[in-house]
Length: 96
Image (cartoon, rainbow, N blue to C red; front, side):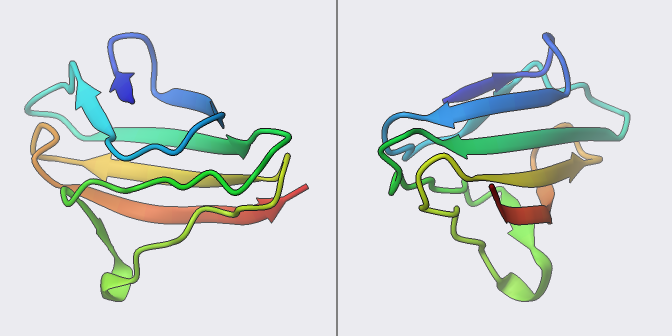
């Protein structure tokens, strides 16, 4: 899955398959960039999502995406180095 930042900074993604690769394209350089990501499980649920190593989480805790069908999670990602490193923040999980 590729998030093209030329198209916006908010992405709603319905997980209808396991996601093993997340990449970013058109990340602006020389400025702060924040991306909001809403990950929605489809009606089947239990889809997995793998964060790239470039996303760093507080205390090294890598969140697991909610597996419940039709539930969603919200994450915010921030970079100030053109996308080399992203700081990940949990906005909330297990929304119904």
